Amino acid sequence: MAATSEASDPLQRLEEAQSRNLISPEASANIRRWLTSSAFSAYRDTLTASIESEQWKPLEDAFYKVLEFGTGGRRGLMAPIGTNVLNERTMAESARGLVDFLVKRHAGENRRLSVVVAHDTRHNSPEFARVCARVIAAAGLDVYLFDSFRSTPLLSFAVRHLKCAAGIMITASHNPPSDNGFKCYNGHGGQVVPPDDAAIIDAVVASADQPIPMADFEKALAEGTIRIAGPEVDEAYLKAVLGESVTPERNLSIVYTPMHGVGGTSVGEALKRAGFARVNLLAAQSVPDANFSTIPGHVANPEIPKTLEAAIAEAKATGADLVLASDPDADRIGAAVPVTGDPSGEWTTIDGNSIGVLLAAFVLERTKAAGKLKPGHYLVSTLVSTPMAPAIYRKSGLKVVNDLLVGFKWIAAAMDAEGPDNFLFGFEESHGYLKGTYARDKDATVAAFLFAEMAAWLKAQGRTVLEYLDSLYLQVGHYGQAAFNLTLSGRDGAELIRKIMASFRTTPPANVAGLDLVRVDDYAKHVTKILKPAPAERTLPEPSGDVLMFSLDAPDVRFAVRPSGTEPKIKFYLFARSEVPAGTPASGLPAIKAKTAELLKALETDLRKEADRIVAG
Image (cartoon, rainbow, N blue to C red; front, side):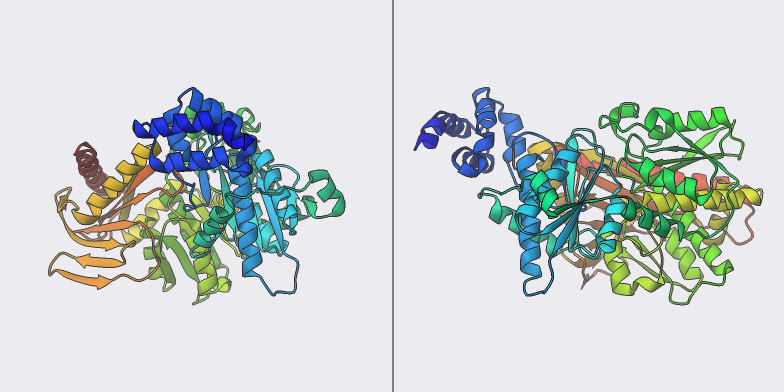
């Protein structure tokens, strides 16, 4: 009765706020649960203080729903309290939900289950990793916990290497410093996919009202329930990455930045061990820093060209041939090259799709030259990645799987479904790449290693990276792509994102950039609607996801719309292609590229106008 009495005043304030529409019924229900259940007693004082100071908007955003699994697990803002944010309690619930799912899934098996846990350099990441380890150990499973920060792909490798039932990576990848995340991996080393993700979140919800036991960390270490993972796993991982080499050329000078993240332990170490003797680890960004202090906007995302500016300046000053960057958890890369090959001249960054095309073509070419190309080899990419790499592989008579939803977890699942022995390369447009079967997630280490090999191989021939890309355009046509996001935060933002998706789903624009809409693929409703030349409708097979793909009345011109699964954004992906007539010299490409760029700009202009109209309506 004492707890109820103490909580009566904040409960009355909460009821009054709801009656005045200051807080939603959903948020109010979750707050009430935290105020009245003994499972949340440790957080009651903080919650009561927020209510007394009438922090209704932050409370609404923190409590209006339970944080769901998106394309990469649970990711979002950190806050001391809340069901829609990441804190000690929601991390503990995530770990406990995973444990309960694993116990049910593996019931009857004659083996002791284990989970490996790793973390990046973000605020609270070490503490969250330890919370997860203690929860898992208390539930009777064994835990492998890395002694310090590691990369996400290393965690994927470790699940397989240590023969664990699952893995947890504490990271928010390239999100702002305010965020963190809980990435969940299955026993194959891939991020969980449906129906497992829904089953895990159901288990999380089922345990949400209960106290969650945590083992004493030092006692669990002494008893061996928690074991420290370290050098043996690192060594095995680096050996696997370096085993993916496709050329011996190493005459290259590189500036590499880990953007204050974990990449020095993986990307930097692999380049050094591979024999690239001139690797300049950018000093200003090599120190782990959860605030990403030297990165413009404090968002360490190699997809954003300006995040590479400091590394490019260093490369120009030192005469380097290549700039490479990895995001904070080292699963994505960015790259920049001198336009003419002269380091003292103009530099340009390379977008994620173009990196994918370059690496896919390079791996294909060198594998074929080595006599190792097999008829069964295949390429994997996603719906919103460039169709150019698939065109190159199909031209070589190879299989392509590129009807996958957004997220590398689908590429990992396809690898196992198609047979990993014939997997040659996989990529997604958001700067994620993989060669090899040692992991089931994108890996900045192998991608940076291959890009460095490619640049060195081209340099030995007196060619540049951009000249190589142009040679590919001459083979299959000029493919261009662009993307833009609308960031809409909080509950109000989530409603606007749903509104935009609903409008594009039910009443899409009939004409974009002067081209008629001819087809819509709806991966949530599993319907393809043919609008022209003759209206028709057919069933679209699995997988299922909230993605809309719109095809326009021109070959390979299309756009996609989807809500982000990890950030408060709605994303637009634009694709265009211009024919390159046979016999066109390289000098004829600029005019063709300009034509593609003009079409992409027109697509973006019209789609932004349509989104603004929906938001304002």
